[in-house]
Image 1 (tube, rainbow over the protein chains, first blue to last red):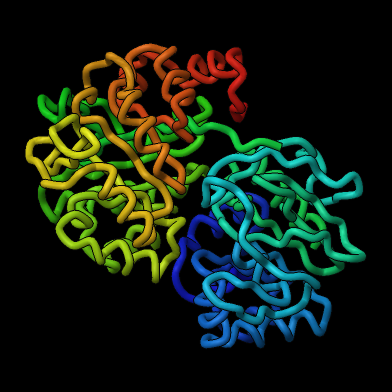
Image 2: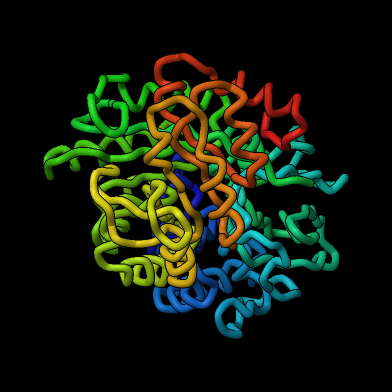
Length: 198
Length: 253
C-alpha cells in the first residue's frame, strides 16, 4: 500500500489517480498508523513553504515523516513536498524544513516567475527514477528551488534562469521539483519506475 | 534546458457541454467536455482550461462533476475558471481535480479576493483572466466585464500590475476586440502587458490560422490559448506545434 499524506489543501486526487496507474492500493490519509505501515509515503505540497510546514506540523505529518526516515522507509516528495525535506527555505520568511536533505531552498533567479510549464530534464546518468525517460519534459510550477546537488545522492539538475535541482534520489528518499502526476506519459513512467523499487 | 511554450485549448462549458460563440454571443454546441479533453491530451495539449459559463447553480454542480471526470482521465494540468467568488469555491475546484483556477469579474469587484486565494493556496494556483479591449485610457487598453459588454472603468495595465502585487501567478489576456474574429491575436496589447508583467502571460482571442500562434509567442507570450479553431477541427494542435518547432520555438513533443 502507498499512502499519500493529506495535510490540508491541494489536489490530492490527481496524485492518487496517477499513482494508481502503477500501484494497486493508493490511499490519501493522515492516519499515523497507516502512513507508518505503508510500503511508501508520498509527500505532496502546493503553496508557500512556511504554510506547508505549519500544516505538516499541525496534522502530525512532520512526526510521520521523521518516523519513516528513522526506519529508512521509502518517501517520495513532490514540489513543495520535496522542498520541506531540505533544511530551510527563505520563501516569505526564513523557515526551518525537516532537514533530511542537506541544503536550502531559495528563489530562482529568472525574469518571469513562477517557473510554469514543461521543461526538459536530462537525467543524471546513474538515475533509476528516470530509466526510459532520460530526456523528457516534465511539468513544473514553482518559484523556489534547491540549487545545490545533495551530497552522496543522484542529482538531476535542470535550468530556468539558473541551474536547480529537478530531482534527487538519496537512499530511501526520492523527490522531484516537478509534478510527475501532471506530466503525462513521461510522469507515469517515472512513477512506475519508482513503484517498482518498492 | 528550456521551458517550452504552451499550447492550451480552452473549453467553454455550459450545462455539461462545450459551447463556443463569436464575441461571447451566438453559442454553438462543440461537444462533450471529457471526450474533448481526452482528445486534446492525445493531440499534445500542454494544459487544458475549462471556463464555466453556466448561469445557474445547478449547472455549476455539473461543471464540478465534469472537472472530476476529466481529472480522472487526463494527466496534464487543468485550469478552471468562471463564477469563482470565494476561497471556498477555489477549494471545491481544487478538490474536484483542478490544478489552477482563473478569476475575473469577482476580482474586479473585490480585489482582495486575489490576496485571500493566494495566501491560502499560493500564487501559482491563481490565473487572472483579463478581458481587455482598446479604449481611451492611459495605456490605451481597458478592462471589461460581462464578456466584454461593459467597461470595468479600469486601465488594463494598471489592473495587471495591481493583481500581480496582490498575488496572481499568471495572466490570461483575452482580447475582446479580437475574440472570435479569427484575425489573429492582439499583438500590440500582448506586447504592452508582457513588458510590465513579471508572471507568465497567456495570449487569448483571435486565433484563426496556424501562423497566428508564432506571432503571439514572438510578441512575448509564454503560452497561447484558443478554443473554436481546435473544437471545430479547423486547426490541429499538432499542426500548430509542428509549425512552431520549424520556426525554432521550444515546444514539448
